[in-house]
Image (cartoon, rainbow, N blue to C red):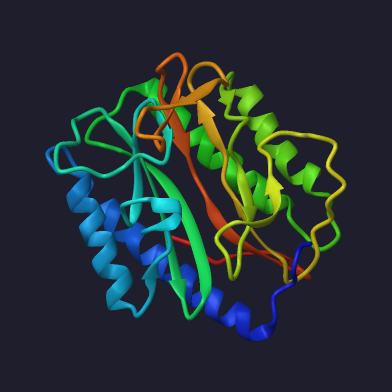
Length: 248
C-alpha cells in the first residue's frame, strides 16, 4: 500500500531533504583528485549528525557507511574506503540518506572529478536530464508509467543503457516503501496522488543495460565495465505538480 504523508510527516521530510542537500552541496565543493571516499563519507556523516539527523544508510542491512560512493563502472552501493582515492577523469555517484525524527530524505548525484572526457560529460548531462524530465511530468493523478517513460525516452535518445534491476521507490518512515519505481515503462497502473513521496533515480550507462554485484555483496557494476551515472531526488507529489525535497 502506498501511504500519503500527513502534514507533520511532510514537514519532517522537508528537513531530512534539506540535510541531504547540505551534504551534496559540500560534496560538490570537495570532490577532487586525491581525496579518498573515506574522507567524503566522514564529512557526510558529520554534516548529518551536526543537523540532528541520523545517516539512513549506516547499518541498513549491514551497510557499513554513511554514503554510497560508486566510481566509474560502479552503478550503486559502492563502499567508501581509505584506499579508494579519486583520480582526475573519474566520475563518482554519491548517494546519501538522512533520517530526521523518523522521516527519510534520499538523494544521489554524479560528479566529475577534475576534467572528465566528453562521453562521460554527455552521460552525466543526459542522466540529470532524465531525472528532471521525469520530475516535471509528476502531478496529482498521473500514471507512474508516464513519469518513468520520460527516463526511458531520454536514455534511448542518447543511446544509453538503462539499469533494470534497480530503481526508485516510495520513501517516508522507511527508506524503501511502495511503489517500486522502474526507470522504463512496464505497463504500471500505479497512480500518483498528492502527498505521496517517491524517490526518482535514473541509473544510465554508457554501454549495455546489464549489471552484476561484486564479491563484497554490495557494489553493483556494469557488465561491460563502462561508466554509469546515477541521479536521485526525493519528490513530494502536490496538487500543482512536484516539490523537490532534496533540491541542491
